[in-house]
Image (cartoon, rainbow, N blue to C red; front, side):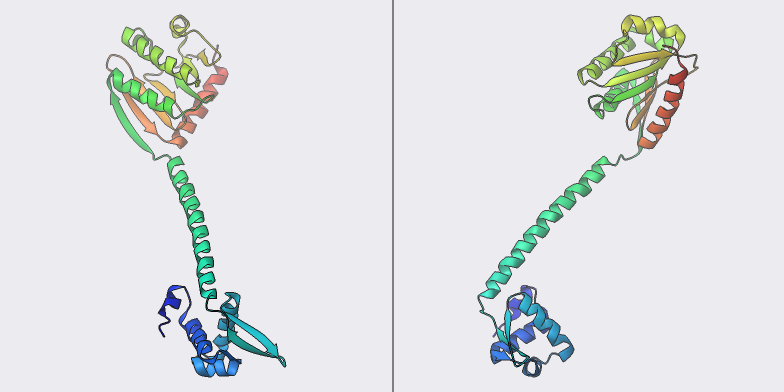
Length: 250
């Protein structure tokens, strides 16, 4: 009789030996099962308990002595069905775990830095920053220098970016030099979703700070930007921005 299939069902060598012994004995006390199976007495009790639990072996008590006998062989099919159900549950739980792990990976921002050249590259960097924000979230910035904002191409680029921001309902706060007040009031009138304050800062480049990205840029005469992807660094820059925001004038 080939009982290897029982091993594939998950039974151990000892469990198979005890089960085989009961096939031969049909019903028996512990002593004869030990003799027939060759399994030590210290292990037989535990094995029989497992086989009973699985519905493969039954027992009755006669004069306070347990007499074990083989359950219907059809119970092997039921045992297999139960194991399949357990495996299905394990598979479902595993799929859930994999999704959670993948979500964790996707939420972890890989720190890196990128360089962009030209106004098209500068616009791409800003769109990347806006794309990671959802409705109601904001980015903050220190404005580029006055000479850059006087360039028509630069003004058109920033107006296009703010139009995209408006469409996605992302808010923005900015700090600019006082001499840029008229420029901002003319081309980007103040709104609730877009606020500007002014302070006497000396910045050679504009700095835009998003959720996980920072753009350090110069838009004139040659557009050039360094994009830093780091949530920790972005938070640090935003803390600095907010300190200046508190003392800047509207």
